[in-house]
Amino acid sequence: MSESSYIMRKVKLSPSWSLSNEKNETLGSELFVLLDVIRRTGTLAEAAKQTKISYRHAWNLVNHWKNFFGSDLVRFTRGKGASLTELGEKLLWAEQRVSARVGLQLDSLASEINLEISRALVSARSSLTIHASHGYAVAHLPELLKKLPDLQVDLRYIGAAESLASLNHGDCDLAGFHLPTEGNGKTVIDNLSPLWSENRHRFIHLVTRTQGLFVSPANPRGIESVSDLDTKHIKFVNRQIGSGTRMLFDQLLTKKNIESANIEGYQSEEFTHAAVAAYVASGMADTGFGVQPAATQFGLDFIPLAQEKYMFACRSKDVRKTEILELIKLLKSSEFANYVKKLPGYSAPEAGKIVTLKEALA
Image (cartoon, rainbow, N blue to C red; front, side, top):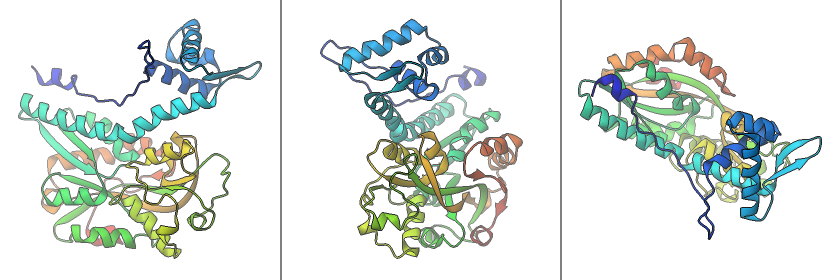
């Protein structure tokens, strides 16, 4: 098999779930796609057009699953088009939550499988292994790196501390993590400082991004800051221990002298920004903490609280490796800059810049 033919045959893993009844009728992905477009466009006709199915098939699909559940999924109002009922919203939320919660783990597994297959088929192909805390700019790297067909990328999402530990153990070439700015970085630095050193590591800027609170549209609970989580009996959903986002949130609590034990839901854990946003969008929590694109993805309002720099760490001796230099060149490209501009709360003023530890912490 030639190298070019292998590139077109990559393993992709996608999360899915289904509902079945006693007749073995199974709820499938076609309905979820249709419901999503109905919610966005407000008309069945436009939803059918965008999903490339006939209007009759779309109508039959909605009515078939209405009978399946014994309740409407879509509400049709004369002069106002179509909207999802509470059941329709819950079904769509369930699909989105499955994707948000396990999608990145499947992406990591697919990346690992692809790398091993690549090594078996094309032993001369170079590879770049990245272990990184989840972020929307990081998630774009596999697409960006398609411009380097001779470079096989293995991107796995793990927490900031785990990523740096992997780098020190020689398990990856780049470790992705984020450093809060404006005096909010003490907790993060205290937790991560045993894992880096001035002499052994160099750091590469990726993006600057904003983190804040996710709230339902129009903010019905009147949440304005982390102080409200301690005083208004607000239900919160947290990120996992070891994630940079959780460390940043803990720092914000410390600055306000808030005890985490007083926050309802503090012990809950989700592993991505999108999973936190999906949890809030479902109504299972009043708020969560993360980056703005996740709020936008799930139709939530966003209260900005802190800025941070997302960076890659690498070993000093590897900073001039061909694979890393090629990545840096792409990070400095107009294509990456244009992609970042589309992410709410993101910017890339120093993308690709290499700095020392002292400069990274400045």
